Figure 1 (cartoon, rainbow, N blue to C red):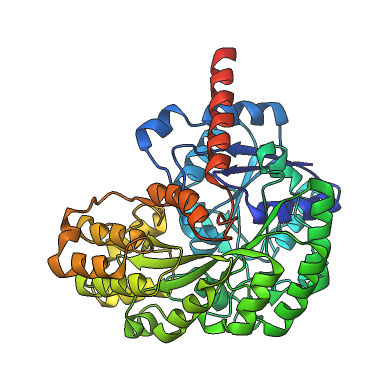
Figure 2: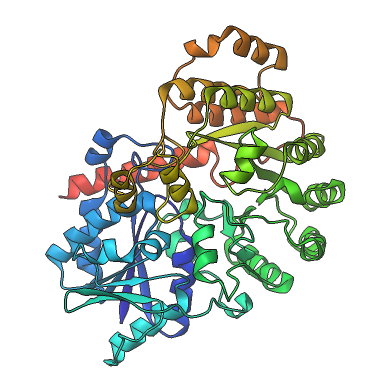
Length: 503
């Protein structure tokens, strides 16, 4: 049985894990990829994307591969794209389609009612996906498979969830060949992996709040052993000659004992620059020292908002301003490049609060303060809060659950506001502006003359220049650098041109 995964924009670790899990059971897998050159998280232009999308190429490759089952990993941001392509596939091929990922997990009924998806896999996917494939391959009954949702006699059936995989070390290493063979430019760049799954926190805007609710008796947060992560990285160094590592754990430093052992062995055996996400509440002088010494090149740290009351009572996020300021101060004199994150468009957020956030970012500088717009995700607690605050209507909530539009939070989310965006773009530049100038901008309200369009690409370009100014910070990018993105676009534009000439 042949399973083809269809994905867009970026490498997907979830697909890689499921693919390796299927291959161990001797099933054939393949990938069909939409690069989303102008329909991605950071660069989105509807008109250009219509001209330069890869739908025809995807259909042609599916025609050639002739899969028995097609799988999509779906988040709210790529849901509309996945539905459009799944509909086109259903028109042309007699093939079963399965959706997995956090969006189908949250609203399986919406998806199955469309009539273009045969199965939804909720929650963690490896075991359920393999069980479904084996049942279909061997003609066995599949209706009782846990984590599965489907339609029977016109009604949606949502089966109970199985416990999350208790020991992550039992999983095979992710199938990197799936994406590396699609685009060889991924090889020798940042090797993406995770040392854990889930998060101990349930921030109201985050999908981890949904997963923690789904697995109340079986903690969704689990950590791989130090041995297993080190073994994977040694394997990756030998197989792919990787040059950097990106850890996409929600909070890489959460387990102090694990971290100390891991960083010591990483420093000795792996010796590569790496990126990770950290929570300011867990950072102290010793942890910063260990990260820096082990080769940590960049970290991502959340500020969200200046208001501690808002952070705690609306966002359900722990940590205070003193901890954030202390963390930024500790990181300042290291070789670690620091990204801090600020959220705009929060329900009930005032212009005064955004201006205080701007001053905070200018006072306690990171290497770059990234701004993101609130993106409401289906079934997250923040939606209930916004409903009670009368920020969202029932119609708005239905629109969020249907996710018909592409609204990535790096561009506009659900809450873009031109006036607030002007302040946001000053926040984006606050790392490069003296505090006195920022205070002058706030006092005189000259931010009103700032552009309202997102300046994230400009800021990324500044990182490329600024990294030379920040002594010793040689690897600031968590995945692709500017030149890497240029090569990525060039590769797929050339591929598009050649496809056009051959048809």
